[in-house]
Amino acid sequence: MRYEPDTPYTGLKAKPVISYDQQEPGEFSKAFFKFFNYIGVAFLILSSAFFAYEIANYGVTIGAIIMAGMAAIPIVYAVVAYPNIGIIILLMFAYFIMFALRIIKGAAPLGTLMDGLILLLVFGFFVKQKYEKNWKILKSPISTLIIVWFLYLIFQAANPTTEARMAWVYTVRGFAGVTLTYFIFTYYIRTVEFLRIIFKVWMLLSVFAAIYALKQEYIGFFQFEQDELNDPLVAQLLFINGVWRKFSIFSDPVAFAYNMVISSIFCICMLRAAISRKAKFVYGAIAALCITTMLYSGTRGAFVLIPSAMVLYVVMHINKKTLIFASVGTLLFLALINMPTSNVTLYRFQSAFKPSDDASFNVRKKNQKMIQPYIQTHPLGGGLGATGVWGVRFAPHSFLAQFPPDSGYVRVAVELGSIGILIFCSLMFTILRQGIRNYYQIKDPELKIYCLAMTLVIFALNIGNYPQEALVQFPTNIYFYLFVAIINITLRIDKEKNDILPPVKPKLLIR
Image (cartoon, rainbow, N blue to C red; front, side, top):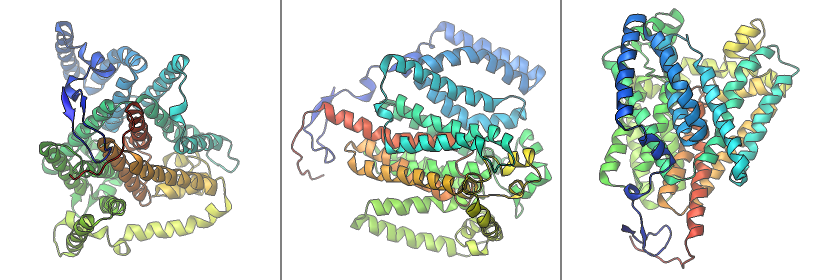
């Protein structure tokens, strides 16, 4: 037993609390530790030997298929009976799905498995509602707009102007289906303990991805990666100035860079949390690692995101100390982007802040100007999936199939029209507004930092959604709705904690 000290955030008297390591193991922990016995260890050893034999004799594909078959039944049971485990599986699967597809060269329907996992969590949600019947936690302005967005995406199936109706079938999964995860996260994440587990899992995955990028940078690519890079079209995009852009375990350098950015922003926010020096050192090291490997991606759009997030941070914390640090940081930053250099990576970083000198940026501006009349005359857009891969497949001779959106906002405007872009921008505005408001309302310092970090991450992703499509690829599409849910979850947990405690007079404490 220990005592929680007086804190300027709540003004509460010191009270006895149970430390984190003394708490009763939760649902997630109990289910996890049941596996640690002689039978469980023997099962793991035999399974490892079996998989090694099969992969050595029949290749990686057969090993992946056998593993998926053996894991199917326990995973289905765990996801429905223990939804917290299902959420962790979903977050891990989202990180590795594109890596797995690259290894097995698309031989397994992993995208369908992801859809099935989401549907299992939704099914478990409705099963739980039969006994609990608690819909209040889903009520918020964000929830309302997400429902409107979801229904509009479904309505697009009847869009009379589309020339690629079948494209909707293939695209709606990645747009409308993923939005349902917001309600899953909002409903099942109810404790600070589980939030901590989620953040630890996320950071471990980010560190793995960053280290894998270092391997690509200094050791080279595996053969299955090199086979993909041998494609002339891929090489044209990824081989810049004699250097390969790194993509780590993700689908492309853009997805890799954006995930390193949001991990860095979270770690930077945690540096001002009330944690030990050791923990701050770990977060600082992860931030430095992610920022460094992000540069190897060569994604100009990602380079501006961390400075953009820090601008919002300064605006939300205007005081003398913050302004001094911001001024010093700005001067160092200006020196960095203007200093002469022969380093290819650093030069590409500097060019991100001089868009007028970037040929690809100028081409995008020209394309956006060209498509404006179409957007203005098609309020419902050309139909979900009308651009990109599915547009080329199902309506190869259509006008939109030949148009490269190269921007999340432009794609929404082209495919979903002025009505769609209005709903989308309203949703993003509401999310950021709610995040800022919740940050100032939350009293618990830990929850306050989490809310701040999620708000900055979402702000950065919205900035990044202009030069690139930031919210459509794994794992960002899943994690984005997790971050949105956490904005509301932190305020809800904070209110629940304060409702239990007796009201006290606030007092001024000097710290």
